[in-house]
Image (tube, rainbow, N blue to C red; front, side, top):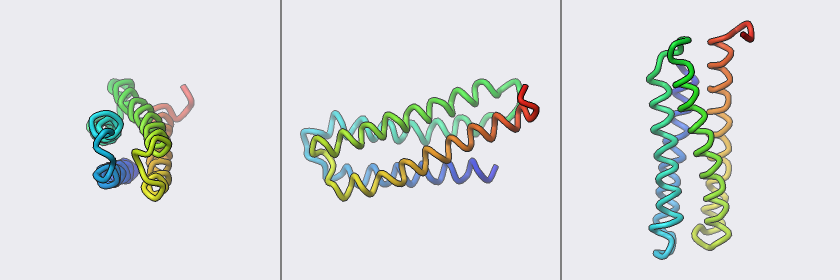
Length: 126
């Protein structure tokens, strides 16, 4: 359970950071790139909570893993959006650089959580 807590805390910190740095984005990006970044980051937090609500049992493992994999996909898309935001002038360089490490850290935590669940549900590799 402790690892899931760190995953959620990391995602929530990333969401706060995304919302903070996108506040100063140019207006013409607000309903496109900024909105998409904010929606993705909220989806990450939501997916983590949805996955974590399911017990780690064989009956619910597939659904739990589906949520976890969607979170990984959303984090990859968010990484692309952040990069695109910097390239197009939506994000300042300092804002872009402030997002790179937390984004990667969150991705690694979710990956470790997913693989940990796989090992716990099937310790023999079945």
